[in-house]
Image (cartoon, helix red, strand yellow):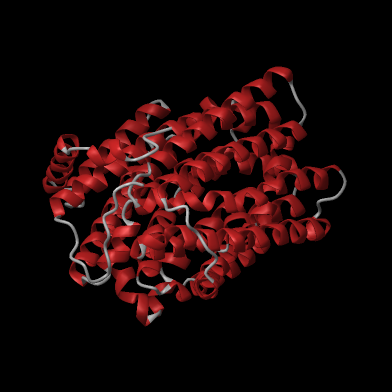
Length: 504
């Protein structure tokens, strides 16, 4: 067993310096792993897009966009609630996770049945339905991933990061092999399922080693898990509607070739959506405990909003200024029509990063029952806008629908709810000026008579200067990071060496 640091909601939090070093070390491990995983994922995406072409890429994207609409049933939001409960009751980790695994196993079978039965209504017949059935096999792996939440609770997410790197590296190798032999689309689906099997088994094996083997099904806690997870699961459903319904509607209302161009833009814009999850994962257990200390809780949320908005806006500047050269470099000239879509879609990442902080703050505060409200609004707006804009503007219309619905849902609508108003204003204090600086940087460089990548560097330079002048990033932030790095490097790691297993 690993050495545990038991913390309850009434316990004092660890000292700021020690905690900062611990979070920094965990986050650095996550980001390095995520960085390598993104590198592998980008390589796989580039080869896959070039190899499949726009039409087959559209079919591939349509299959997984449709299945994403049902993922909420299998996962049911258990991970977020488990992280909170296990953070508070570490000694019951084994039984809590075992209870969630049993529930998720039943729900995963229901998910496959519902997705396959309803597939023809979404236009998946014949060969496409066969592809969908094969891809749906991933749902049975959902319960195997639940033990991995212990990595997050114990701030040992280098395990999760390592497993993710293994999966993405394996996926890249499979895509290279399929590209060399010019394999049909069905083998691409099977290759992805195989990668999911490897990832899930590693999570199951390594995750279970970090809690006691004595496990039992907790009937009362099962009801609690279902009750507390349902708002999150429902939110996932509605969130997926405005995350993926655009691709399903493009599949029905246009052509797979048009959808393929849109999927190419989506693949680039979503490469960085792993970052807010990675950055917040170290803070989630701390937020669950810090809720008992409002000043400390607000400090964590304040810092998260500020850093996330700077990072998201920086990505927007980079991708908008360099949309055409980036698409041409990655996918070739045949996918240049995807560049305007990327330049629009990337700005929705500001709302995505913003929402990551909001969602985790609400879950830590046991206010997850509020989450369905913004997602109902967001899903309705997204579907309505797609119905209006896709017939008129095709895939570019779908991109605008995504941007508008994301932004309104997480940065405007929640202002109308008394419970969330203070939290949203807390975030908007940073989001508004940082986004304004990013837009100024783009507008100031858009007409520069220089090659594309020089324009990117100029825009980034203006953005960095702007956030420094507006004090969105200060010298104290750099000092904090350096202090955390120094303490992290000098910490005695006996607990890591005594833990079993010691690594992958």
